[in-house]
Amino acid sequence: MWRRASQLLRNTATATATATALSSRVPQPRPASAIPKLLPAPKLASSLSYATQAAAEATRAPTTVGSLLRLNDLRDNPGARKQKTRKGRGIGSGKGKTAGRGHKGQKARGTARFGFEGGQTPLRRRLPRRGFKNRFSLTFQPCGLGKIAKLINSGNIDSSELITMKTLKDTGAIGKQIKDGIRLMGRGAEEIKWPIHLEVSRTTARAKAAVEAAGGTVRLVYYNKLGFRALLKPEWFAKKGRLLPKAARPPPKQRDKVDSIGRLPAPTKPLPFTPEELEFAAKREAARVIA
Image (cartoon, rainbow, N blue to C red; front, side, top):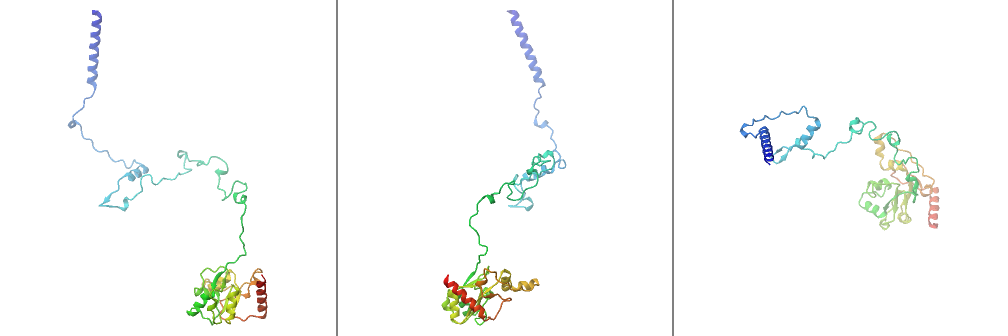
């Protein structure tokens, strides 16, 4: 029993001595006055990379003068502008060598034309067609007799001169877009009470009857696209140093719908109808009545 108690006392003394030795090795905190002041670390601007400096500038708060920002401090928010992937610039980027295209094959080479589907029938040919567009259709701009009579009464049009499509365009009787010519309409036909002479592309039966009843004439003339430009804007050819083109003949589909070929430059005096033209006009009117 006494041997057991002596052994316990010996172990307790050993543990106390060990704890005292360890506590003497732990550094004790020093007072604040004893700590030396450290100098600020020097700036290593030369050792920083361009990307690091740019990131530091982006996160720096803008300098203000009063309540206004300076122009040299304006910049995007961090992360607003993302740099694009630079392909083919080394294996370290992950997009070097084949630049993400893989190895040999159609997709590793150049691009194909738009709509190419690898040789199979493309979609534009697989879908059925619906409807059609008539290549021979003509678009005429309408012009009523009432508007022409109003321009004559206001003095913009001289009724003693030949009224051509250029006259109607210059006086504002029609718009600027003349695609295939002008169609004379019978609106306001009762206002025509004096003889007038017109040259247009098409006319209605009512408009022609009203003009002829007043003692005037309506001649149907043909101009192609180039002829219309020479008729409406002859100064364009003079500016380019070109001669006016020769008047073109009407195609077979329009030969029986006009009286004569349009004259260039724009005429000022009407031409009398020849017997052949009168006979042809009579046949055209008869065919229209039968239809």
